Length: 129
Image 1 (cartoon, rainbow, N blue to C red):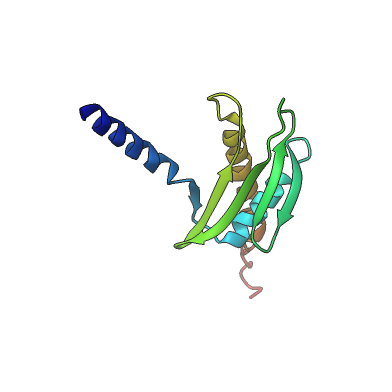
Image 2 (cartoon, rainbow, N blue to C red):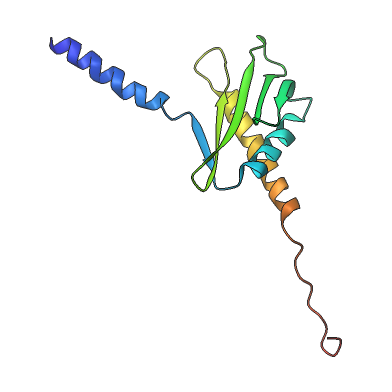
């Protein structure tokens, strides 16, 4: 009986790890989706199989992998931000493809936010107001 209890506790603790598949970003989903599209637009990194802009979902493969797995990404509103669900399949314990995607997405998000930011106001010289 004790071993069943230990097994049940181990299962429940691992189930909570699988219950949090989202990365939450403090931006609107329009901004995050634009960054996802920019990230996937690099043909040297990803081969896009399909993009659904209406539902904000995309399926793709990682270029250069020995086995071509169909990976997916989707975004949806969550609270005051946007949640991204990334499902990337990779052989072995290394999750370098997911880490690489998140790193590229972070760079793309900075580019999208910089492009959307209003230009800084230039000071008006005195006497020309």
